[in-house]
Amino acid sequence: MEDRDFDVVVVGCGCAGAIAAFVAAKKGKSVLVVERGEYAGAKNMTGGRLYAHSLRSVLEEYGAGEVDWDDIPFERKIVHERIALMDKASACTVDFSSEELGRETCDSYSVLRAPFDQWLSQLAEQAGCEVLCGMAVDELLRNDDGAIYGIRVGEDRITAHVVIVAEGANSLLTERCLGAPRPRPHQMAVGIKECFELPAGVIEDRFLCQPGEGAAMLFAGDCTHGYVGGGFMYTNKESISLGLVATIGHLQEADTTICQMLDDFKKHPAVAPMISGATLVEHSGHMVSEGGYDMVPRFVYDGCLVAGDAAMLCMNLGYQVRGMDFAIASGRLAAEAACEAIDSGDASCSALSAYKEAMESSFVIKDLKAYRSWPQVMDGWSGMFNEYPSMATAALNKLFTVDGSPSVPLKKRLKPIVKQYGIVKLARELKRAVDAL
Ligand SMILES: Cc1cc2nc3c(=O)[nH]c(=O)nc-3n(C[C@H](O)[C@H](O)[C@H](O)COP(=O)(O)OP(=O)(O)OC[C@H]3O[C@@H](n4cnc5c(N)ncnc54)[C@H](O)[C@@H]3O)c2cc1C
Image (cartoon, rainbow, N blue to C red; front, side):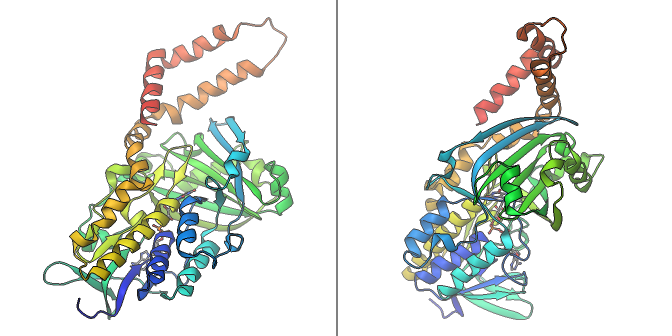
């Protein structure tokens, strides 16, 4: 192999990039990470709950004895789940808490990306990587045969045997330099989030949690004014992350903005008490891919691999949002394939295709494939965001109210509510959703 400045260059120091760099360095490779933020995490945002399994497995394999799980800047262990269907003034909420949610191997944690990504970046640096912050990669360098052999940062050209692109969901390099297709507006969403500071004790009282433990809540319906999307709430140590996600395609058709949706969401009677008396300390926005498996682009090229959100590895099931665990796993698999190829003296697409095989046999592609039709179901399911919340409210109002008038059997009360929407339509929609899940 020709001489290069580094064995591996990684673009982006988010979950995928930092873990790819860490693994490659642990395998003895010289690694440079280039991050456009002033520091890792400066430009990042997530909802955010991290399902910890892929981080645990990579640390067990490559950081055993060096990384103390308790040193990871997690916010709270999530042991309390809520899902709410909301109309303008009410919310029908499923509330679930279980020890199982906190059990090792299926545990999950709320995270704030600024501290979490800085920790990931330090992990990579301690393994021997160079991390260059405050500089954006402008271009991937290609030789006459079309193989990628490095990056351009401003006037500087830096060469590598393998470039791992982990630039996140707004993946301009993969589009511009690798020819990945531009996602369609209905496949991408915009996320908006605010963080509200509250004392730890108030959070624990408000969300019925023990110290160190926390709650997650997802919302559908009026939070996005009935457009496809949803709301989220995660408790951190001393703050609450509250936000919305809405698909760009639907926002283009909407008669309002996502900022207005968030303003209204915060005033909703089911949400306002959660942040009452809290201080707004942060506001952020970010893109997120919502198209599932069908929007995953090619992710193996001559001299180059694509990992994490840059490869559109994200999944929003409505009751579960996953991207960070995919990013960590794909970063690891990309680094392993890159190191193997470098060791064999061949970084061509066919040598690097071990990454594709590893991804296909891992949970990443298997899970995305398992829920492949879900994004289309959600995208065309207007009832879920409009009529279902109203039906649930009407049904529960009838169930729980007592005004002294003679009682009517439940079946008789519910029939007109369901009939108005259409029993066949409802049954068909529910079957379609169950089939997709
Ligand atoms: C509102 C919202 C809520 C979400 N909720 C969850 C959740 O609860 N759980 C979950 O698991 N996932 C969630 N996700 C998805 C999750 O955040 C992503 O899947 C995950 O962050 C992907 O990690 P990544 O490393 O691939 O990309 P990123 O974390 O986006 O990292 C990419 C990095 O590359 C850098 N970069 C970009 N371009 C360049 C360049 N040209 N040069 C140098 N550096 C560059 C960026 O600054 C950034 O640091 C959510 C996403 C959003 C937007």
